[in-house]
Image (cartoon, rainbow, N blue to C red; front, side, top):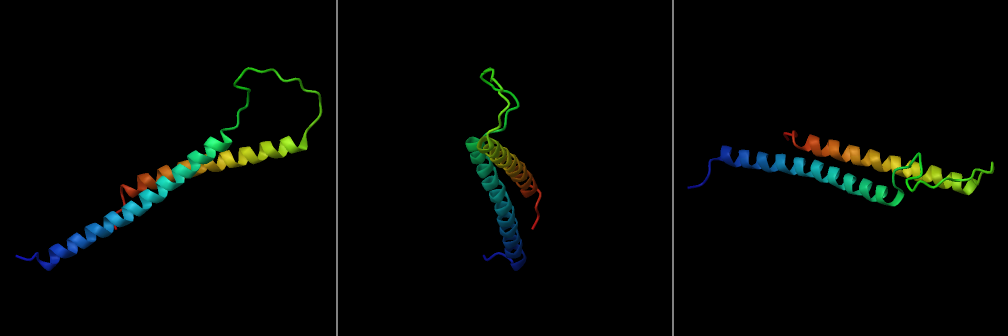
Length: 98
């Protein structure tokens, strides 16, 4: 009528396996979402103007724009890094066994 203790232990082990796997998968998913939101805000830095606009270069440098460009590039690189780490964690979660 009642399951044997060994069967109960196997059931507990399965729950533990699912819990660890689910936690790793959830962490990966959260990192993916954060990375995607950062990419939405900062974008991937472009080497060329996607609209085809030709800019006149007058030899002056705007330090505010230089700092803004550095900040956007840094955050977009962090976003890509978070997405890659998130995907790796989701992949690892498929093979975790306790």
